[in-house]
Image (tube, rainbow, N blue to C red):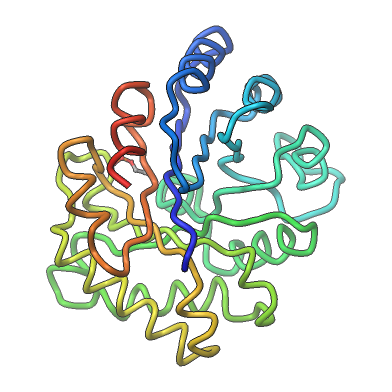
Length: 249
Ligand code: PGA
């Protein structure tokens, strides 16, 4: 059985007071589930969030990380810094990092390698733009993002990789991929990984869907056989919505 995950990407939202309030509410209300529940507050609030979730099933992830051990990289955060505050999961490759901050496949491959080397788990995000989907190039785009970002990894590293397929046109737009579109792409991703590695790895890797997942559509999306959970943006900022999505899994 693959592990199921519901992860909340808080992006650049919630100050410390708001973070503590939402984390406390989540800790109190998180439903009983066999799925993993992860939240990713902004860097400055990670330490507080990590402390607040200590006695709950909730885990805390960072939204980004640098590829170097340390040094002259003003404004950046290293894997060791995250691990030191008990954060050992990192989201890498989010489309907002790729488009607003120029993160390329090559840079992401370095970040992924560093995270794995440091014993962290990676939620690796990728997905096509609207033009790619319209022109029918979406499978090629996804295949190349996977290849360039991840295929330098040795087989044993894949136990630390979670994939998050997030079609860019569905992020924050209110437009979700249909359950059939999500399933079609997730099955394709699994096939690609089987070809690059083997079926042991492809059948085991958790593949999340992200892009306007809400309480009213989560169940239908999660019911697809190759969809193992979700990476949730906007709806993870409200306790009731996020817990409803956790219940849907
Ligand atoms: P959204 O964001 O749920 O607000 O569309 C998803 C994401 O960016 O991970």
